[in-house]
Amino acid sequence: MTYASSVQPPRVAVWLLDLFTPYKQTESILGDLLEEFSDVASKSGVVYARGWYWRQSVRTILHLVRSEFRVAPWSIAGAVVGGVLLVQLGHAFTEGGIRTWNEFLSHHVHRVSRFDLFLMNSGMYLWRLAVSMLIGCIIAFACKSREMLATITVSLVCSIQAVTGFWTFLHGWSPPLHIVLIVAPLYFFGGLFAIVVGGGIVRKYRFRFLRPARS
Amino acid sequence: MSSRDYLGEFEHIVILALLRLSDQAYGVTVRQEIEVRTGREVSIGAIYATLGRLETKGYVNSHLGDPTPERGGRSKRFFRVTTKGVAAVNRTHRALRSMTDGLRLARRHSQ
Image 1 (cartoon, one colour):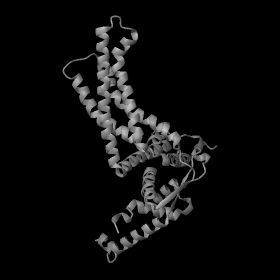
Image 2 (tube, rainbow over the protein chains, first blue to last red):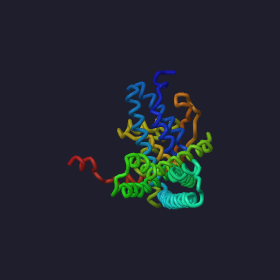
Image 3 (cartoon, rainbow over the protein chains, first blue to last red):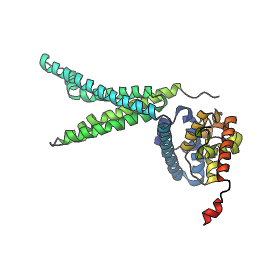
Image 4 (cartoon, rainbow over the protein chains, first blue to last red):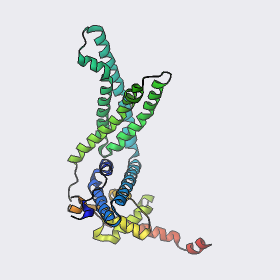
């Protein structure tokens, strides 16, 4: 094994490419980039080669994303509209359910257990995260090979509402620092990441079953 | 004949690269061929997005080769131009030729 072939490309870039490339092309794109990376590393050094790999990865992802939007604009738009509605519904039901549970506990249960206390304090955040991840999985499942594109777009659209909500929440009073830095961001923005994570999970599992056949 | 029967500029370049490379046409060689001949730096994503589109139109087909260790055990995807693809190239060339016939591009450019 030569020095150049023992040097590996940036892992994060490989991971991102793995997430964003169409199933049929993932193996060949990663192989092509690795082949050229080894060549560039032996000619120009590892640092330059890593920079080259990052540039290629970013340009490749942007190109493939643009191409997907051009090829199937309506199916992506449909998935995004459906996904945003699902997020709204999911969050409304979750919050409604948790509030009802909390009211039930405070009115009917005199000795609240530790688990109930935990649910009362953190339940809303955890359920919101879990429901968001589940919604991310549903959107990704419906979108076939465009899991990441669809979930990221849904997440970006929902982020407008999250930023507005975050701003409204903080505006007009001075909450403690831990609420500004941890609790509120987790509540408003955690769900957005969870949607994308859900998309990534479906993508990974689906990829295992859809490896291209050698023909 | 609809406008879809003609190749786009980059599609045209990619198909010509495939024809030049013949049996050795895969992502790396196609990218390098285009860079060397046109001086245009292209990403591997641009090549694959275009090849994917051409494959959907039936202008090229592809098959996977054997996995190789220098590619981390990954296979090369080889591409070949179909008869329909060659016809599309010829049609596009004819259209370009008939549009440029009689134009003195070099002289106009230098004026």
